[in-house]
Image (cartoon, rainbow, N blue to C red):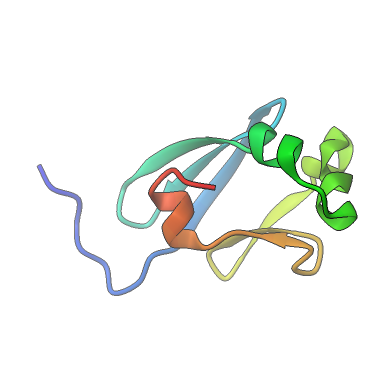
Amino acid sequence: MKAPMTAYLEITEATYLGDYRISLDFNDGTRRVMDFGPFLGKAKNPEITAFRRLNKFKNFHLHYGNLMWGDYEMIFPIADLHAGKI
């Protein structure tokens, strides 16, 4: 059975799984487990490397269907997360 088509894509739920992994549920029925560890390990920008501290990384929230940290300190395109890419 195909997932229902939606006019827009958004994240409806984000659940912290441990380490740098987050489970993301999308409004089209897709669920992805994203591991942000490799991305953070390669990052050079101090604003991004700060999220290597798990207490800071765990402090994410959904804002209008987007997964984000702080006030747009770290955010990813929804389409990339949906495709499993960071």
